[in-house]
Every structure is written in structure tokens, then in C-alpha cells.
Image (cartoon, rainbow, N blue to C red):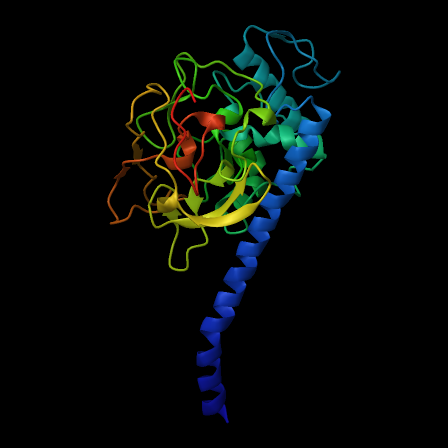
Length: 324
């Protein structure tokens, strides 16, 4: 009887693991659908504008008694930083991350605006993929991040109080900046660095999206639902659920997308290459490289930098040339 039970367990184990993996994938896709529905409601209530930081230079509309009340924003980037800080304070039970210096929160924290609109508590409803186990630990240890004492690897090598409030999911940069040209967000030397020299923050409108069923709105930079391991999203064989502007969530293979372009040279036929340099053990909180080395180079950025931005197309059709 014991031998038979062992055989049955061995037969059923792969099926059970696959079922659990499918459930986690469905849960992640469900969260993206909620975000898409929230985005639709936000645009309806905010004159067709996509969710992004709205505070601008000058006296900011901070909550009285809040950490940035009475502060003057010298430029739009300072204003966005103040808005992000206040949202975290209001949505995380009075937790103040403090002054974060030269921080542009739109890149990795744009989700805070939508969370604020939806009224979610950052401590109980974070925007984490359920496979993103490291961020769950960081959120639980947010006080240690604030104190600079968090010491359970893996964690970002640069400890910052704002890290626990990142999201697994990123907005495409065109949702809050220019489609291309000198004022657009540019790729930097590696996958987590950016060139913001001439960056201008914009309030984009949903009506600017020309191909909503073909244009990615939100994605995870790590494909976490692959059966064997995690992969960086730009690896051609990566697959993950993606939120599109038509509010659909579809699992797509990265290599089936259009290659994208270089936003600094929008008329060039070239793509933006990405050097992927994950942190090494014990701080290996991202996906490993393909061959286990220190870096991978990917020739295309795909939907991170869609050709023609919001007017462009990522899947199921040709790229939209710049200016059309």
C-alpha cells in the first residue's frame, strides 16, 4: 500500500505543481485586470488623463499635517517626489520615507497614483506579483529599510526607504513622458538606469493611444511565471501576462513583439538595446542571466520603448513609423 501511494504521489506531483503555477498566473493576471479597470475609471474622472503624478512646480496641494505640507516645489520633479512621499504616508499608515533627494518617482513608482485613486492600503494591497517573494519581505521590513538596517538578502544594494513601495509592474514610459525626441525618457547604461537629461513630465491622455488592443500599458520587467526559472523580460523566449490599453490581459512571448525604437533618435530604424546586469549573490533578487554570467545584452527593448510611443503598436501588426 505504501509503495502504491508513493507511486501515485510521484505521478500526481508534476500535475499539482502545474496546477498551482496556473493558479498563480491567473492571480497575477487578475491583479493586472483590476489595475486596467482602475485606469479606465481614473481616466473617466480625470478628463481622459492617464494616471500619473499631477503636482507641478509651486505650492503643492499637500494634506495639512502631512510630511510635505507647506513645502514649495522648485520644479516638476520635486513636486512629483513630494506627491509620491505623501501618497505613501497616507496609504501606509503614516509611514514617512523622508526626503529622497534627486528622485524621479515616475519611473518605478507611477503606480502610487492609481493606488491612491483606488483607496488601497499599501501595507495590505501592494502591487506585487505573487511570485515576487522578495518584495513581500521588503514591505514587511520597511522600518528596517527606513533605518538602514535591513540585512536579510537578497535586497537592493542601495538600501532606500522607498524600495518596499515599488511594484512588480512598470508603466511604459510613454504613459507619462513624450513618445520620443529630446524630452523623452532615454535608456541608460543598464536595465535599471535611465537618461533623464532633457526629460519633461507630461499628462498623457488615453485618446492618444491609436492601437489599444496592440499596445502594452503595464508589464513586469521579470517574467516570473516560466516553469523552470525567472527571466528578464527582454529575453525573446520570456512569456508573461501583459496589460494592454484595451484593458485585456494576455500572456505573450516577448520575441513575438515588435522590437521598439530608440526614443532619442525616433526616425532611426534602430532599436534600443538593453544591457541586463542583475545584482549578484547574495543580492540576487532579480532573474539570473541566461548563461549565469554578470550581464546579458539584448538587441531590442520591445514594448518598453514602443516605436512612436502611445501611437505605436507592440503586437499583432507592423510598427507604426514615427510621425504617422
